[in-house]
Image (cartoon, rainbow, N blue to C red):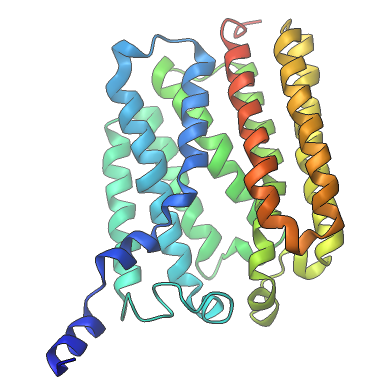
Length: 301
């Protein structure tokens, strides 16, 4: 290998590494939640397809991707322990390129958010601010096993749901829609706690007080399962109260499936957390869409 190629690789990010930095696998939850918000208000989708497409792109690749870049930059020392193959600690994104990418995507997020109107821009601003508050000093809410996952759950599930509903209806969503978005955001606290299992050793070394670190994997897993289950139990109860018993039954069946998966998780929390994220979470987000369809026509009660 020539000296010039080595210098080039050491100063310019690799395109594949930049894509890896913004973690496409994490884009699905906010994109899905945005679609849930759209469905929940019952506004015709086809006449508003530009807002639908733009919002999905903004929620996933842009805002969520920006948050991942910011988190990787702020976590580069932790990742050197937990995931040294990640783009920044491995040197595939050298120097301060990780920071510049995160900042550029923050500006892009706000610019695209402005195209969604007042509600879209305001929600995007909250999302961008939350992403930096989660990862960056001096706030760095991810140091807390309670506030960190709560903020991420809110921005991954609650905020996109609210945004989709507000953008399509061009007004403040109904009490029912906002309540459902908040409940699923609350339940997502448990999902984010399980996600912290993969960073257990690095978090412990660098003072990140995630629940797996402070409570231990077994207790943290029980807390996560309780939070996810409680949120959905409240969803089921409200759907019954709001006159949507059949939707409540389907969400209840999905919750039963999750409880069975939780039993497997709790037998080996650290080892089975990735497995649960691929099974139980799929049932969780399926229930979100069922609840979104249930809300159509309920607003204003």
